[in-house]
Length: 115
Image 1 (tube, one colour):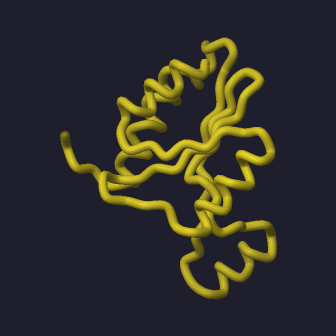
Image 2: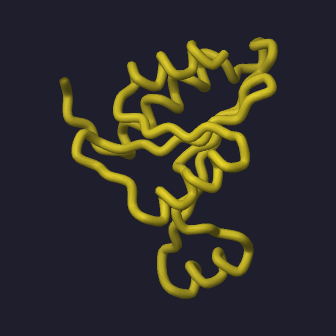
């Protein structure tokens, strides 16, 4: 198996999902979007925190018919931070599902099972 970075895995998953379920002719037209959760410097970080940035939020959110999935992308060796674990716990307590995804194939299977 190819050892890809978290960003590359996320990119592959987004492109596949967008091209498979999010084009104008898809019905229903699904949603997947990233949550930029970093600032370039301390000032930008402070501004983002003041407007709702939350440490630990999942990399992406996928909106399916009557279902929302919170997805964190990790490479083969990646582990969740404590803030990510706290976010997962909050999401689960609110009745939503949170997944750690490590490959395009794993993502495809998740989406097919939840569609």
